[in-house]
Length: 146
Image (spheres, helix red, strand yellow):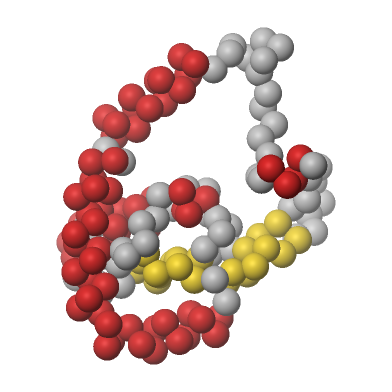
């Protein structure tokens, strides 16, 4: 995969829903700029400078299953996507340089060993399942609980 990312100029990853975004993280670790939807889970790890955020809006989605809260997806701004791709050739070198400079940080911050250590620390601090302090329900935002 590293050779594939190295042969590209940009990872274009507009999404409506994303679990984690491993392709985006891999691309950034290889020094490849990423154009991806803003507002999802990837906001937690995408680095400005190596990430070109694609504006989006949250839309409700009708599903035939029980769901906590409302089901939603992101609607990437198609005009912004076209405009960013149109101007990319004139700024590709600067964006690639910025992405390469940030790739070492991504490699260190998201190594398998580092993630495993963080998960173990989190699990050691979490109350056991069934404990009164345990909650499997996580809110998307503080406003959602108000």
